[in-house]
Image 1 (tube, rainbow, N blue to C red):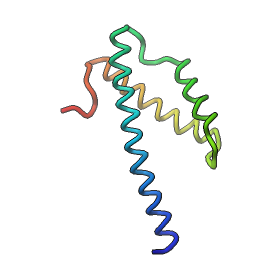
Image 2: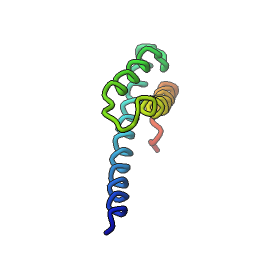
Image 3: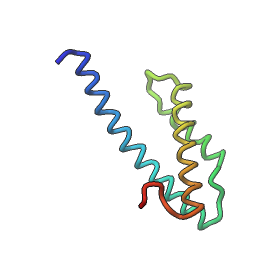
Length: 97
């Protein structure tokens, strides 16, 4: 196996781990939506979202720069907010059948 194939294999393994972690994070967002509905809280909480961004930028060791981490997590937060709203509207999760 060439060095290139080895690095590509490693990236594929990491991608699978990322998908698993993103789904775990998303399930947490669904549960947070259920809890927010119970206590009548809004899905969008700018202060909390800003805190998340500060925390991930602070924990960034590189090689991605802070702006790249911020952009990635802004998208992740957008998806989490949508899941929270969805779970608040009808109490379900996106993957249920």
